[in-house]
Length: 86
Image 1 (cartoon, rainbow, N blue to C red):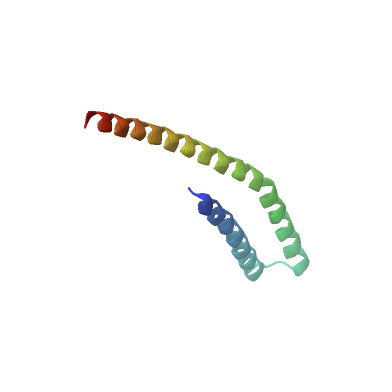
Image 2: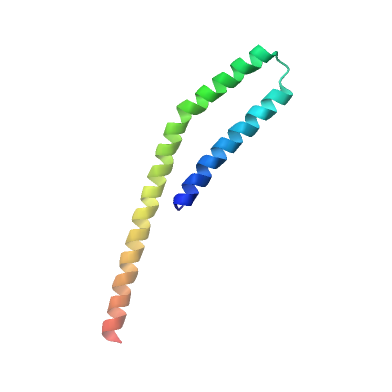
């Protein structure tokens, strides 16, 4: 995943949260105060979960970067060998 992938990830979280909140408001059989309290709780849950999701995504990206570096070094060595032989 590239840097734009990270941006897309966060945009997805943001858009999903907004859509979820809108649906909750439209379908909620609760009063306005109860709905606001519910949304407040959900936003707090999201706020707590987000740092862990970011850490997991960063860990995944780091592993992918290591793998790509290894593949790149291997390919470079193969091409060097081919040039020396050919």
